Length: 49
Image (cartoon, rainbow, N blue to C red; front, top):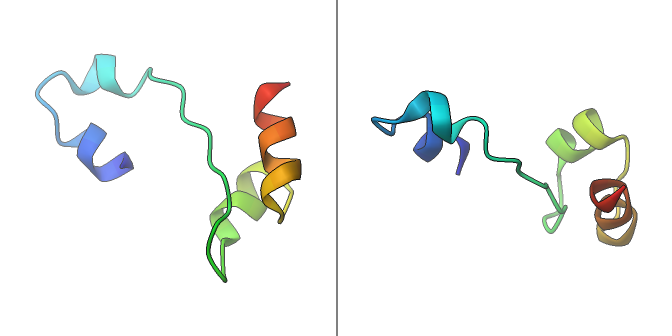
């Protein structure tokens, strides 16, 4: 998703779109690094806040 947004012609506008990351795989280190949570419920609550 991020690569797709960065490859668009309107990249500057596209990167301003807020994105929430919900962990759904076995190894979601990106979510842990960005949000500091590992489970989907905690990630959703953090995103909503």
